[in-house]
Image (cartoon, rainbow over all chains, first blue to last red; front, side):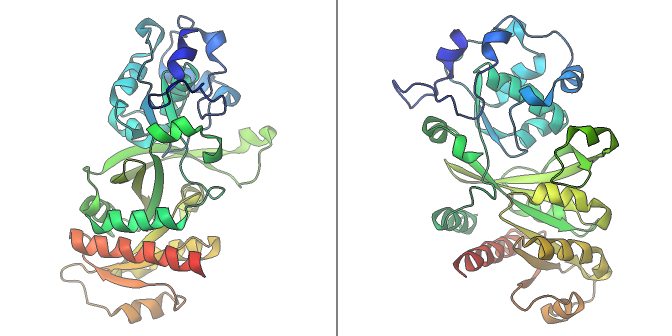
Amino acid sequence: MQAHDAFGPGGAPGGPPDRDAVGGYGDAAQDGPDGGPLVRPYVIAQGRDHADTVKLDMISVVIAAKRAEVDEMSLEPEQLRILELCRRPLSVAEVSAHLDVPVAVVKVLISDLLNRGLALARAPYTAKSPVGRDVLQAVLDGIQRL
Amino acid sequence: MASSDSDSTRDTVPSALKILVAGGFGAGKTTLVGAVSEIAPLRTEEVMTEASYGVDDLSGVESKTTTTVALDFGRITISDSLVLYLFGTPGQERFWFMWEELSEGALGAIVIADTRRLETCFAAVDFFERRGVPFVVAVNCFEGAHEYEAEEVRAALTLDPAIPVVLCDARVRSSAKEVLLTLVTRVAERMAA
């Protein structure tokens, strides 16, 4: 599967893609590169069951997979825009603002990209994974530098 | 969810933190965000569910109402592996459901007090106190507005003595920076306690 090979991010030579990574590619097999539905994003968002959307936060950070082969015909135009925007890491909220598409819809579009192995996402810090002192210090230093 | 990230994801994708900036209309939320953000503040729309939390039962879905709320936010890149987002959130009481969703996982909050309408930040102060979200109160000193002492504002809001009150000019980067530093220091203190 193309999508599977492409999933491995740069910087991890030889390392197998981790199935537990956010944006696991469980759906890729069924959807395939050419199985994408040809409907508008709002339709996708409303018709999509919650269960097959990867849980994304407004500040989950997304980046396009470097070596992914993109079958443009199978994607929504907005998804191609997302892949373009996410050549550098952007949050779901930023993607939403740049595309002028509501967060809820962007989440579905990105979730689909993650399932196809075309993008990677990283979950933000949460109450379950609180920040450590080192992170706080980095934040202080970062603000100090402004 | 961060625990489910693979190590390789961690290497290439930064993770994010957020700080909320709450306050009434015109209190200076977006101004403060813009003063420290590396990008011009962006606007996004989020559909928020007005329902009690902890309810995962799908049978109740139809009874939930949703509201679309516009949020302005800015970004500060801390390092290659860390990005900080600042979200301006409406301060009115009727938006409490949104604070609930937004405060999930937030590092802390800045409540902007507008001394011309101090009551507009009561609800936000109550909320963050109840939720145990670390926060500071930033008194935005508008031109022409009566100058208050930090202690007067503290008394008016009946704030816990441990909660910092900072006078600021939300338009000025160094001033907004000071507010942020006060908040993060407060977070660090609470962590140490």
